[in-house]
Length: 249
Image (cartoon, rainbow, N blue to C red; front, side):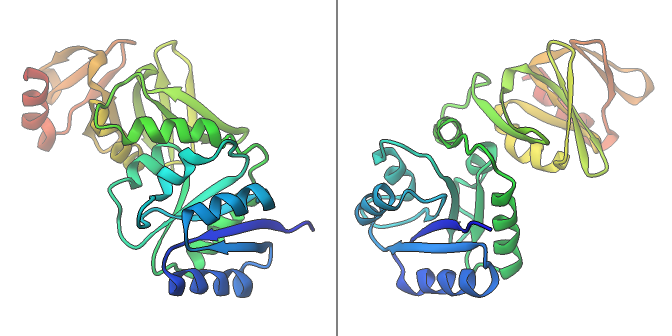
């Protein structure tokens, strides 16, 4: 089986060597073609080796991992971000459907990230970087997009097209403006973390709604919202006061 060609980019030598050792010992599908401690060196190595994936540290002196990506003319590889702490950009990384690893990197997390690489046939990295940039912008807009993994690959969906999302065990069902639905293997909590900054609210354990598409609030039966598509969704008792303040403000 053909190896997955990788480049590791990290300004800390100990972190770089630790990841390289773990890949060699526990991820035989990966071939580390090169390593770099400086982003400017990494750019040259990427252009030369044309890797399948780069392991990219977010925080580096002089040039961050995000800034380095902007310097690249072509991005025809997958990216797995690495960071020493729960970085402010993690939610943006999730929205763009990139993988990330928290240092110290756990072997199981690393192996799972490599397994996911094997399932990617079309990296679509440029589109994902565009979503990442939008998500990192302080001005959140429902015109921004979210990348959703499906059985066929990735779908890039404008946030404004999502009416509400319903939880069903380990799956979530997304309801769209045009009345079609999409079921994905992602927890509702994951969607909540990503979409709350975009004017979404979790009114119930099983429901996350786009506040822009509430048609009316019904006081009967303890409190329910009617969405633009006619769906009535229960508002949990413990959420009622906070929810009413949100829609009133």
